[in-house]
Image 1 (cartoon, rainbow, N blue to C red):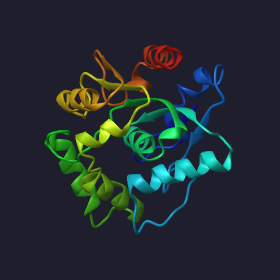
Image 2 (cartoon, rainbow, N blue to C red):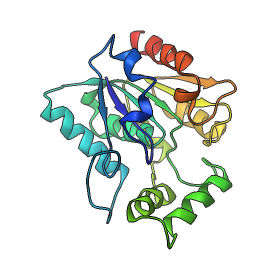
Image 3 (tube, rainbow, N blue to C red):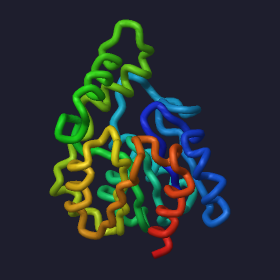
Length: 207
């Protein structure tokens, strides 16, 4: 089971998931490029690059396929991994993921915060790069989601920063998918309600 964290996060973002799932799976938690303890150049960053990193790591570890859980940016990475490297994903669970960076998917206040950091005079180069990526990416047509043939669990909080209609459209665009909207929950539902979140993901993976 492979875990992909969100923008600006690290392996520690899944501190409430790793102890639960490691009893049942071989868990591989990854610091994404430019984040946590992973390196990389701040000159450029894309979700495609990170998905390629993850595919390469699975090859290096001689893992043919895995269950994948992605939160936020990690959910985007998971969708791209399942599209571009379909044999590597047995089942995919994503929470708080978007496939376009505009107001059809996110609220204006959140987009404005990303832009402010992306073009700030005082933010670090890495913070600028991470936020610039979210301002311009991803750009995934809904039709491309038809390329994903593994089962996908699409999740979000009912008060997520991702608009519910966008989460619903992602779910509706996938060939084989389940949908879960957590009540009284925000973008960090995996940290906010870990027991419910973990059991929901486990039930899906075991189906």
